[in-house]
Image 1: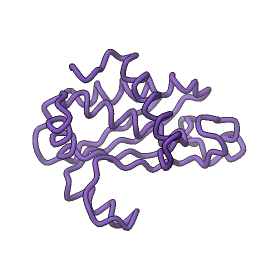
Image 2: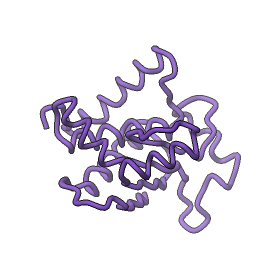
Image 3: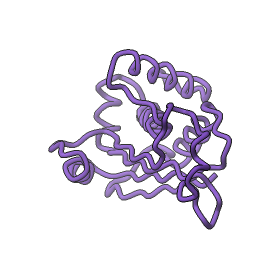
Image 4: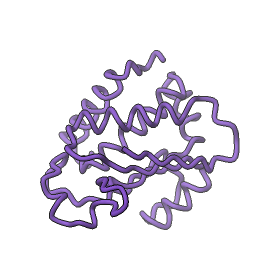
Length: 166
């Protein structure tokens, strides 16, 4: 699996973000039992940058904590059976399934960790788990979907021993 991490944050990040991102991405891929080796891109930015991306891509004029850009068009969330229907779903050099891109505002990681009274490590891990589920086709537009995503996020984080206490 290739996990490409770009740190575009202009200040120091006070957690081992590469370790956290790698562990959560791998755990999420294992959790959904993806049958392929995968590729994921993660970029860490500030509030100004994610605000600009959010405005350009989603027409929402404010910063957000995380943006997910899935590459696959799922018929059923977490069902990868359609992936082989289109060779462009795979990186021609590595053969890996291209899941998509994640953009995280580390400013929001800091703000939300304080707001929810848990560590920055936990907040970053949560945002990665949440975004990975979006890359697998899950959403939270209605309550049933939101509840399902929350359960899956918690399982992924609990499997790694990442709780609100750490």
